[in-house]
Image (tube, rainbow, N blue to C red; front, side):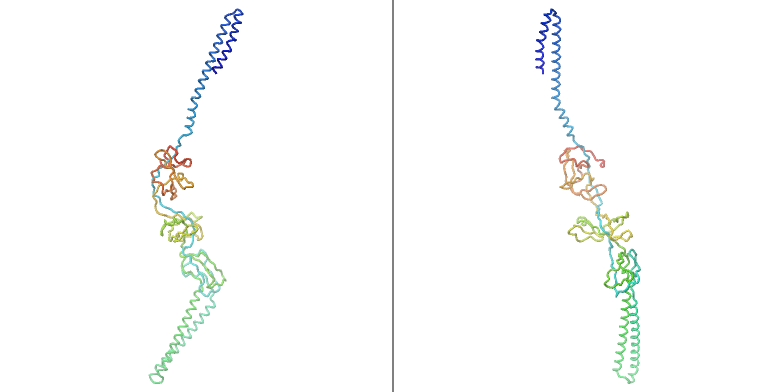
Length: 407
């Protein structure tokens, strides 16, 4: 640019010389000097402008790199993350499960006698019955007549026995006088004994008939709650009819809770559980009374049977949830936001002494309202990233601040 200005100045000089020649030729030397001064000032101005432009260009080149470096430094700003030192907490172990309600000791009741026509049904499903209470009455008109006939046979046999006894008594009086022989006495004794035996047989037959008649009615084998009724008036029942009533002995219920192998291993008989039936806001306290000795090969689950006392809100066949105590666990506890998951499993980000995050694989345990316990992977004295872990990579440099929950 400076060269161009110089060239420009070179081009001007002849013009000025020509003007000066013209001025001198015109006989006016002052006008020629003035023109020369204006040309010099113009050259000076152009030189100054060129110098300023050159200085501005140099400043721009020198400071451009610095601006880029500053921008790059701003983009690479170190992130600030919230951290917490979890320590170790004592947590009451709980296992959550679901299952179906059922009678703990169901009792099927059917006809055990000859059977007959049902004349009366005295209870229905949902009723409470006592042991020995009649549930249904069976027609016994024919059986009653048979029993009456057998009772008459007992009287006949008893009369024959009395006659035989009288004959024997008379014979014993006559044998001393020599009117009858000893052999006659033996015969009379045998006749008397046979008559007495026939009385016993007749009475036994009568007792059998009466027992059969007593078994005609359907009675409750124990106190409990009637769960099902499968008999109606006029129905003919017998030994092969099947179940007519189904009772829950003592009204006791149970929850058949499905649990995994690991969960079953933590339970023992007598462990307390809280049961909440679906659709009911009421919670019932029960106890584990049996832990399944086998595991289903398909589902890899077993059953924990939880006994419950009678309550009208507990309906067999209903669905319920259970919270079962499983001892106390001492372990670090973290909020859910601190635990990340990917194809390799669960992990957290631990901030090291170099202020860089490091991935740490962990195993989770109990889930509580206060957080999730960590069964392995942490000692409890590490700084764990609570939030923003999903935007970090292993080895990233960070600045830390205490999480609000840790303050």
